[in-house]
Image (cartoon, rainbow, N blue to C red; front, top):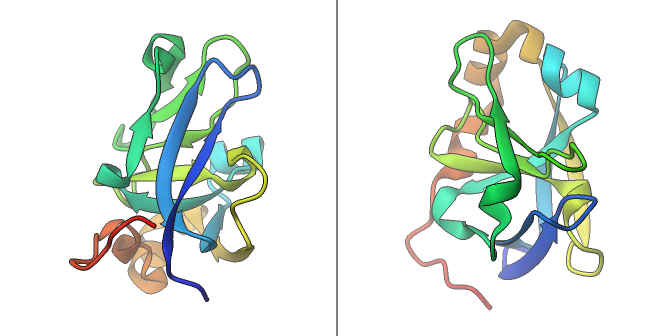
Length: 142
């Protein structure tokens, strides 16, 4: 996999929520079967929060939904309803980016792994997902 960090842009369907994220061209995305992700069909990759930036007045168009432990912050656009990113329970120090909300042309490969959100604790312990939001010391955007 290509680990060079580049800038990806993306956002919601109506384009009122826009962001940029620094991530590799090739990412590992997680398909979760928890009650929320399975209903939304969400598949996301995770980055350290400092590699994610909301653009313009995007924040005014966001609202947040929580449930269960209230650790995950499911953000979505108030206008079109799309969750283009959120703060995941597995990585509260990171951002989960919905890979289908990344503008076309910068992601070269997406490997999809399964996360058993219905059996959250055992999947969390076995998956290695916690390491996805750890920033490497020598990371620089290209």
